[in-house]
Length: 390
Image 1 (tube, rainbow, N blue to C red):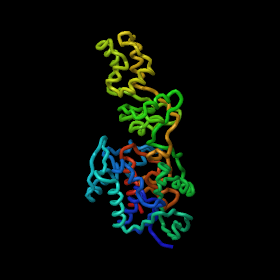
Image 2: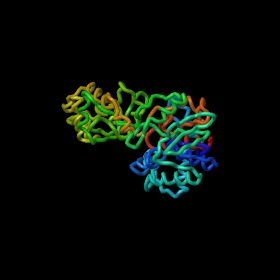
Image 3: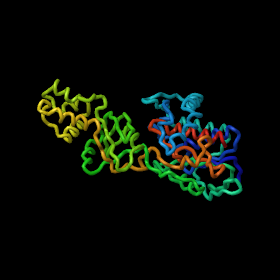
Image 4: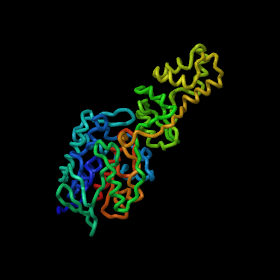
């Protein structure tokens, strides 16, 4: 039985950050990763270039049953703090749209940086082993892994959620949390493509067509590209809105977000012989213009269309209701919404209120960020908060 100050379950973004911070504070830390290497999700992120944070990080860009929970960790370890670490390692980076920061080179640089930080803190990292026989008694957590046994007064759950199971993702974090009496908010796929069925399968014929739109669900809206797929809708705008969408609700798409009310009636005055389809084709891909004009059913020249009919077409194009019949599930979800309830944790330390020494960080917790580096920043910030408390 080997003694540690803390055992971190999960060698992903949050787990490695936590181990590095705690190790460099003099704690003896063990990281157990069941996959054959650490940081697998980091490696595939951002098309292999890791969208490692976002300059626009703010608490209102995270979903949680408690929208205030993330404020403390995000405020104490910021995007600028992580960027300073990246620059200290000489990793070249660039900003894409909407504040998204990527490596110029490879995601591997971020993993190597985290491993170097862990090594600096003397953390032990065991890969290819699952933690088994986890017990808690006399203020110590005991477990076995790969034929070895370890114990520590602190145990950190950093095993993420079930999104992208082909990467080895499971719901282990939730099972373990429940065993210790912690509540779990029902997990669901987030940042995930939506599927269409019924009468809307017509839109699948547009597979591969994309356009910049505003997607809305309830009071939430995102302006980015939407992409039609052979199963339904994807692209950044759809992935973003999927986190807010609930089964049975529509998603409204504004196909012409730059057009003011009355644009079609103005086109009738300026180009009376034009058709709705020809006007749409100026602003949208041809195939999309064809389908939208066909569904609206306006085929005559604009001069022959009553203004009320044109107004109706404008309104439909500004809030086209799609009724998704589901999502592509955890297999295609970038992250998991829901998770270990924030009501069970200290927002300062990420420690469980009713189980001293038990911590939960990263995607395992009911905090889910927008697309574009926000979830990595939550991993760094929550990992740092726990690492500072261990």
